[in-house]
Length: 325
Ligand SMILES: [Zn+2]
Image 1: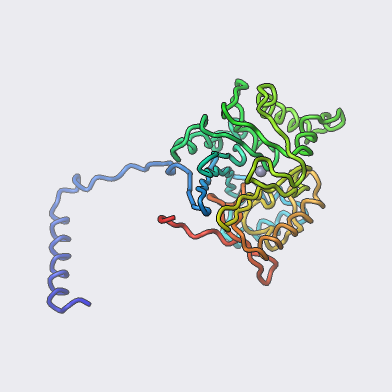
Image 2: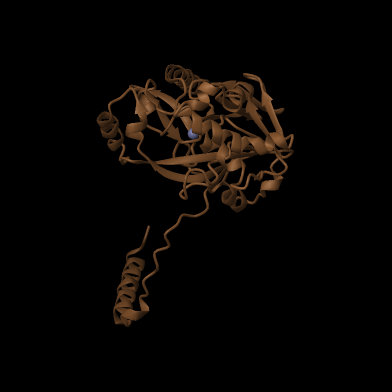
């Protein structure tokens, strides 16, 4: 509570300061330059004894209203506009580091140089977060799409994570790396198959590539759940420490609004649309029931939050920012 005297004093102070500013020559009030870029994109949280660091690969304007399947483009556009999201829609690409104290594990690897200059920032953000790429022991992919595997390998075919073993679901590896001639000739899949070979190949050749069976642990302490549809071996990665749990979802959703109300809406990149929708319904129900933390590759960065039920199916509830984790 301010006393009348203090109030008078502070009011006088403000008047004085305003007067002084008015008396200064205008050149002293220098205009600050427009900076034009964001701070480094990483965000940390504690999970029991572990430290999880969300890493931004960047954001890209995607024509999501067009990409969604099972809804008219104009309806999707109106829906997104209701959440102040434009068309094209700013879309995050996220990856995640888990430091168990014994192992440094990267989950998904961003786009590298394959999806344009607004993306490809994983290495810069790993370094900004205080780590070196050589310190990463394991990389686990939720699936092989280029926005998750492009960052594994440089344009010259060198492994970005020189000491890491790469882990991918067996079914996923088979689909992309041992594709038949029909799949290779497919206009949509063909180029993705070629890209998958480029991204994964150097790890295979170096003997740094391992596959895990459906629902098996890629490495001790990191479980997987087969969540097929988006791709055949698409897998969520589950990490727990001291009773706290986070599930790295990969591409269960694309964006943080429309598919929560309409889990039946798919995206054109889903290899199996029907299965992707059914899987999403299962993943939503489980996350809402069990109330664990979820980390998404395409939720707005840092992409970590919870799922809850509401009158229109589900809601994504982003984690509150914490400066004191
Ligand atoms: Zn993706």
